[in-house]
Amino acid sequence: MPALPLSAQVAVIGAGAMGAGIAQVAAQAGHPVKLYDNRPGAAAQAIAGIDQRMGQRVKAGKLADSARLACLANLQACDALPQLADARLVIEAIVEQLAVKRQLFAELESLCAPDCLLASNTSSLSITTLAAELAHPERFAGLHFFNPAPVMALVEVVSGLATASDAAHTLYDTARAWGKQPVHTRSTPGFIVNRVARPFYAESLRLLQEGAADSATLDALLREAGGFAMGAFELTDLIGHDVNYAVTCSVFDAYYQDMRFQPSLIQKELVDAGRLGRKSGQGFYDYREGAQRPLPRSLSSNASVEHCVAEGLPPLFDGLLARLESQGVAVTRRPGSGLLRCGEAVLALSDGRMASQRARDQGLQNLVLLDLALDFASARRVGIAWASDTAPAAVDQAVALLTRAGLAVSALSDTPGLCVLRTVAMLANEGADAALQGVASVADIDLAMRAGVNYPRGPLAWADALGLDRVLTVLQHLQAAYGEERYRPSLLLRRCLAEGRHLHD
Ligand code: NAI
Image (cartoon, rainbow, N blue to C red; front, side, top):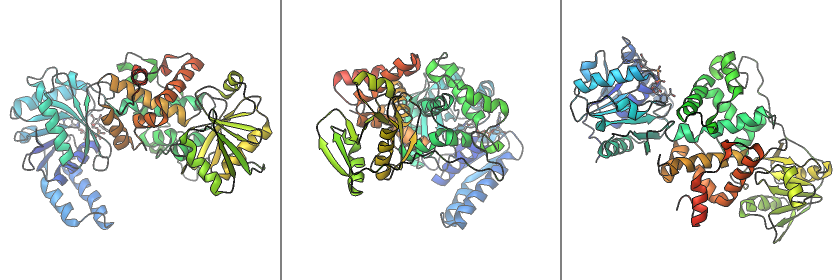
C-alpha cells in the first residue's frame, strides 16, 4: 500500500506535547492537518507554540521562513470533533487512559469515513485492547512517535491482533514520506523501545544500589566507554523519574511481574521524595541554582609502563593496542587466551564472572578485569575491577598502561560483568527475546534502538560483533552469580549459536 497522498486530510486529537509535534510533522510534510483538543483554546495555543518554535529555528538559520509559513498554512485548529469527519487518517494523542481513548475512537468510528485510518500514539496501552470494541478494528493501529516528535526519527507502527497488514503498511509508508524512520511491531507491552531499553536503566540502578560505583562514574562509563549519548542517571533525570518509573512498572505488570523488568527501589524512593529529576530541581543530581555536578571518579598511577604483552587478545582490543603503540609503549603480540600482561598485572575483558572468582577458576594472579568499550580506538574511559588478592602494585601498573593509551580509568567494586558489558549483554538479551517472540524483526529492533533512543549501535548488531558465545557466557555468569531469572539467556541466542549464525543473518 502506498503512503497517503499529500492531499489527504490528517487529523490529530490532543494538542499536548505529542499531538502538537505530530501535527507539525504531518503539516511540514505537506498534509492539511486539523488539530483538535477538548480543552477550549488548546489547539490554537498549540499551533501558536509550533509557530514560535519554528520561528526560533528560522532565526537560527536552520529553517527557511517559507517552510514555517507553508507548515502553518496547513494547520487548522478545531474546537469540535465533528469537524474531523473528512479526515483520511486520525492520530490520537490524548490522555493515557484506556476508557477515555476507547470512548473517543467509538465516536470517531461513527463520524469518519469507513476507510479512514485510525491510529493511537499510546506508549503503554494495548492496541488490541483499544481496538476490541471497534466495528472495524482492521483499520486501527498504533503510531508511536517519540518526544519531541519533530526531532526524533523513530515511529513504531504497532499492529494489534485485528490490524490489517494493508493499514499497517500504509501507516509505515506514510511515516516514511513524513521523513520518519518507521518500524513494524506487534502490540506487546512496551512495543520495541520501551521494552528493550529497560535493562539500560535497570543495570545502572542495580549497580548503584550495590555500591559498584557512584552515579557520576557509572554515567561516565556508559557515555565515554559505551558511546551512549547519556548515562542512565542523567537520562532518567531528564525523562522524569515519575515517567520512567511508571513505564517500568507498566511493563513489569504487563509481563505478569517477570522479574527481568522489576522496578528499582532506588528510583521509587526518588519518586516518593518528589525528586523527579530536572523538572523538580533534583533527581540523582542536583539542578538547583549553585549546585555542583559531581565528577566521575578516575584512578591515577605513578607506575611507569613501557611494555606489554598481548596474548591472543580479541580484535576488539586492536584499537587499544594501536593507541598504546602510538604512545611509545612496546606491544609484543603472541598467541594465547585473551590476556594483556603488563608488569605484574594480567588484564582481561570481563566474561561476566567476578574478578576474584575468575582468578581462582583460572589460577590467575594479579587479575584486573576490563569493562567493554564501544570502540577502544576512540573510547575516553574504561572501567576496571580487580580480584581481592590482586596486588596494589599490579592495579597501579594496569592503570598506568590504560592511562598511557589516553583512557580515564574508573574502578568498580568486584561486580559481575562490570557496567557497559553487562548493560549491552542485557540489552541484546531483551532484543533477542523480542525478536524470538515475533515482536519485530532483528533489523527493526536495532533500528528502533538507534533512532528512538539514539543508541550508538543496535544491541543485536553489537552482540553479533562481540560474538554470541561471549554474550551468552556473560549472561550465564551473571545468572550464576545472582541466581536470578533476570539474567537468563534468551533462547534465540542459544539457537543462533547452535545453528552457527549471527542474529543479523
Ligand atoms: P499531554 O498531557 O501533554 O497532552 C494531552 C492533551 O490531550 C491535552 O492537551 C488534553 O487537553 C487533551 N485531551 C485529553 N483528553 C481529551 C479528549 N477526550 N479529547 C480531546 N483532547 C483530549 O500528553 P502527551 O505527553 O502529549 O501524551 C499524549 C499521548 O501520547 C499519551 O497517550 C502518551 O502516552 C503518548 N506519548 C507520550 C510521550 C511523551 O514523551 N510525552 C511519548 C510517546 C507517546
